[in-house]
Length: 108
Figure (tube, rainbow, N blue to C red):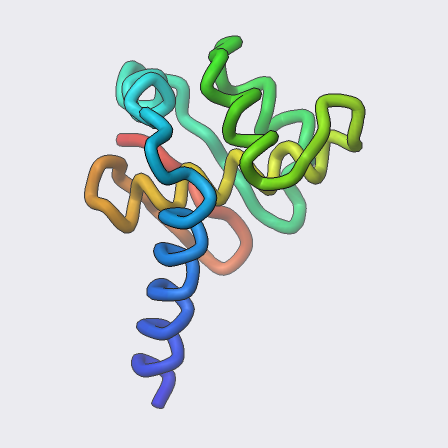
């Protein structure tokens, strides 16, 4: 039963990301992470840390906009949009991900 729920959750994330980011080239984000800009996310990871882990990438502004987040909104909302993009790259097998009970790290 748990496996089924995990599968449904992954599918929902993938479909949401596909709808939001259709036609958007996320390669610069994937490249940045693969080049060593590891990104940690989780309940105890401040949104500012999530955003500071990445270099300034124009695609991140588009990711936020497509997720319905404006540039003047709190860092948490912007970081959530970035995390959706990162998770979609993981589900598409374009990024590695390591998770424990409290933290997820995208990258090598």
